[in-house]
Image 1: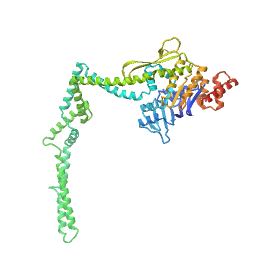
Image 2: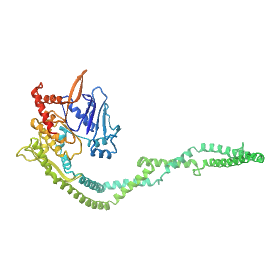
Image 3: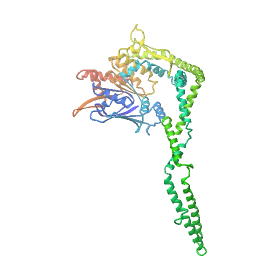
Image 4: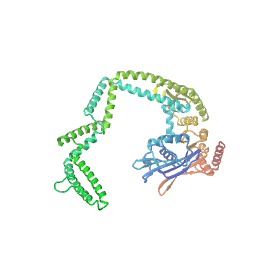
Length: 561
């Protein structure tokens, strides 16, 4: 659950910190106090889009962070799947910031994470349901997901999904092979040209490095000859002066001459002879520098030949890969494509046969899904109908319509929720519902029925009381309180009937200081709850009658615990 929230420099909020508990929390306040800003901030925290215009005037950065504790198995599993871990206390801190140049960053326990990881993790942390979220229920495409949530079709969807991937892969390959003859001929011509161009050069792995080394030697051949010859003459043979080997020979002979009288001289003589042999080996190696690794013949001609081949290799690299290895891999890939096209008739027959088999498997998996969906569709409609009766919509009829469709990633079913809100009216798609209050209650009924199926521990309802009042609002509040049994439910509301049922009641206030607006959030004590509930009940000035009514409403809410 979301145990603490920190907001900094978001619109009228300079800085705001709040600790939250499990159960049902209500947020109330005067219109314009900043309730929507708090919801926008939480939405920013969990990956929703936020405009940099929401950064408080005069500031360069806005920041929202939340600490989540008592992590559910869903969240822990998602963390493991994403390669993340909670801290030593089993908690996570999520932080989102945005700067005035539009740049944003997300951190989890101080470690930067990507936007995709952020979105995937956030979906397991918090669900926000507001007036915009009600539009989800008007989107027919979402209905199948809601039905699957109620039916708990996870394992069946996984089985179907793996077969569907195989099905779409075969269809794609078959479509490529069955493309027009003109396109086939064009591709054959291109592939053959690419293969012949690469084959003509007879590339070998590692040859480019060898050629470049030889080329470098040839370009510096005169310099190599000059210094190698000089070193060789000094070490081994010289007409003008004594070489190192000659001097070592003479030194060794001198030591031999005194070996009978100086004990160490014989050893020194032996060492000098050994040095002489090593120096001779070095000299011979140096002498070979001018020919080692180089071909006989004209060096200029050889250099031209090497440079020409390196240029040819460079041209292929610009077309087909950054190295000889990549060029050869490209050649093999093109050869495979060419083989597939040239044998397309055989491959088409092969893929058609495979498509028949996988389609049959897909139909069987889709039938399993359909049976499970149909087995619970009526129960879902009945459960929602019961909640709608409680929410003062006794005449509403709700039905789940399942009809066949083309193969899709979630089955062969077209699912749509149909509703009739008045007696004698036919069932119609939910998009035909005009009343925001009716739609909000249908959404709440759906959430109420799915509450024990949804593993997300924090649900936020933004002004779910829109379009309703009085007794109906009270019943909406009771449903929210029941949903909050064991999880965290946060509701932004204008309704005293709803707010008085909360386990925790926060008041949002906006004040002015030095010509600037500041929003704050206060956890109300018992008397504060009475005053705020009485204020919401109405009237310019709060009366004792309103306070008495507020106390009674709060007392009734406490009895529901």
